[in-house]
Amino acid sequence: MWGEEWIPILTFINTLIVAIGIIIALKELRVISKTQQIEALREFLRDLNDTEEDRKFLYEEFEFSMGSPKPLQPEEERRVRNIINCFNRIGLLIENGLLSPRLVFSICHTEIIRCVFKLKEYMEYRESRIGSRYGRRLLRLDRRAKIYHDINPQHRKTKIMIDSGPGKTPYVIYETKLEKGLKGVKQKIIWAIRRYFHVY
Picture 1 (cartoon, rainbow, N blue to C red):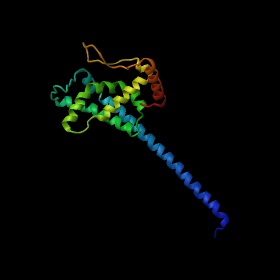
Picture 2: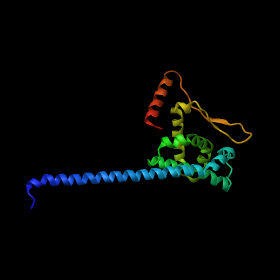
Picture 3: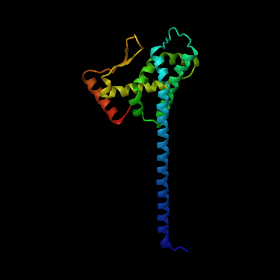
Picture 4: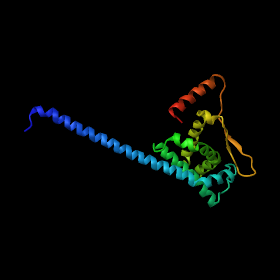
C-alpha cells in the first residue's frame, strides 16, 4: 500500500515520536526528582528541629568516657540515639543525591562537628559492644563538615566552640589549621579548588 518513497517519511515520523516520548519522560523524571528533593529537604529540617532539645542536652549534660564507661539511663540513651539516627538519615539522603551537601553544611556544619565531638567515644564504645559499625555516616559527615569549614574564608577564621550551659565557660573544639610557607600556599590552592567545585 505504501510505496518505497514513504519509508524515509515513516522512519522520520517514528523517530520523532520516540524523541518526543523521551523528552516527556525526562521532564517527568525531573519533576519526580524535584519532588523527592523537596521532601528530603523537609525531612532534613524536621529532623534538625526535632532533635534541638536533645542536642542541648548533649552539649550541657552528656558525658561519656571510654576509659570508665557508665551505663546510660534509658532517657539519655534515647536522646543520644535520636541525634545519631538523625544525622545518619541526613548522611543517607546526601549519599543518595537527594540532599545537597552544600545546603546541609551551610545550615548545620557546626552542629555536626559539635555532636561528633561529644559522641565519638560513645559511638566507639557502642561499636565495640555490638560488634558492627555504628554511626559511621555521622563520622563521614563530620569529616566533610570540617572540610566545608576550612575552605570557606568566612568560616575558617572562626573557632567552633561548645557552650556547656549557664555558669560554664565555652571551650574550643575545632579550629582551622593554617600551614606556613609553600605548604600554606598549596593548602589555599586546594581549598580554592574545593570551594569552587563544592567538593567537601
